[in-house]
Image 1 (cartoon, helix red, strand yellow):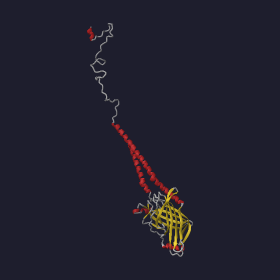
Image 2 (tube, rainbow, N blue to C red):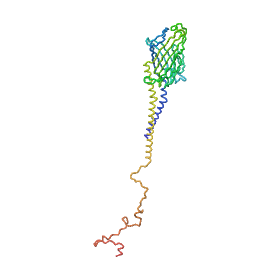
Image 3 (cartoon, rainbow, N blue to C red):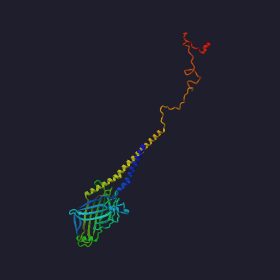
Image 4 (spheres, rainbow, N blue to C red):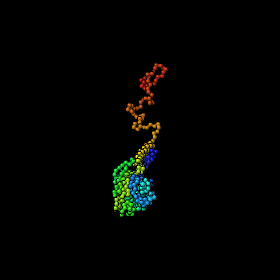
Length: 395
């Protein structure tokens, strides 16, 4: 009984561990390969050395050259996420993004923008949301975000993806170009090339530039080029490194073109290090809960199930032996079993050596054997033995 109880406990524990392993694989791991609701805000910094840029200060337009620093802050908006409805409820998270570009020599602001968008929790791509906006001119504008912006899919593949470009208000293809090692992580490198595309800018903004940068011109357009290279952690889809070689050129209807921006922005070493550390932490969590923990739980569960079966079987065998012993009568002390294969011998049963005859004299008969006369002496004082019948007749 004790063995069977222990076997049942071991078997039950094994089944629970197997169920836990399945839960880790089919429930916990998929939940971990989604953008969390409680993601901590992250900051990324990129620098451009010796950049040429347009700066407008108090209405004064000028082209300058200095080092620039771009700072991007991404903050999840838990309140806006909780208010999502329809297909977005449970599928998307709302992020608020802000960027500032400063010249490092004078600590002056050159440009800034703010945005709010909804991202698919699995793919990281922007989803259509009625409250999304982009503000890079002091006024919030409606915009349809799409494609990848600040996140690639979990388990990124070696294929082309589309990255949204803020200046174009549209997405363009980023091709997979190979793999590179980024501080111990094999990163996927994607490259997006935008060549001399016209920016859709209001006429009043271009009109503000012409008197200072292209005197005599009455109209113009701004052409935009950007070679954007991103290094992605394929497991988490997070950005490990980013480089953007940007150029914006004012082309007036009269006069020479003027560079409004010519800069090579790249993540700082501190930003790359922080991105790699966050990616490694996420990777470790995914590996632990998605691989090692399920494998260990499954292996231990199988061992316990087998052990439970063996112990339970041993208990059943022991119980059967005990039951058989209880059913058999115990032998009585001092009694010898009777052999039934031998015929009992009685006193009157004839034997081979001595066939049964009429009773004869012997030690077990009632007859007195005749006396021997060999001991008769001449001494008259000794009584004479009685003669046998034959001898009496002879006398």
